[in-house]
View 1 (cartoon, rainbow, N blue to C red):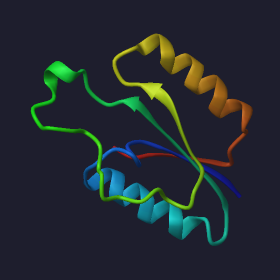
View 2: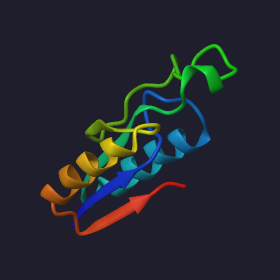
View 3: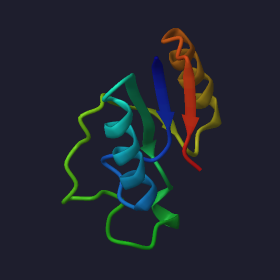
View 4: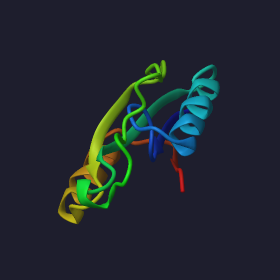
Length: 95
């Protein structure tokens, strides 16, 4: 089965990104899995921490692409077209 997971993932930090990596690594044992994540999660002005990136996290074994710009909704249509091209059997949104 071809599965695409859409949501925060490496190189972003946080619990959802970590969970995405765990889920994708588990699913890839039996399925063809790809992760679609963000080019940027927040505008810099809204982020209060030092970095949105997780310097200690290693990339998941699953192919990951950064197609979504969270603050540019026009970019979302391009991401949808790219996902449709891959004709996934299952699309998982991590929210």
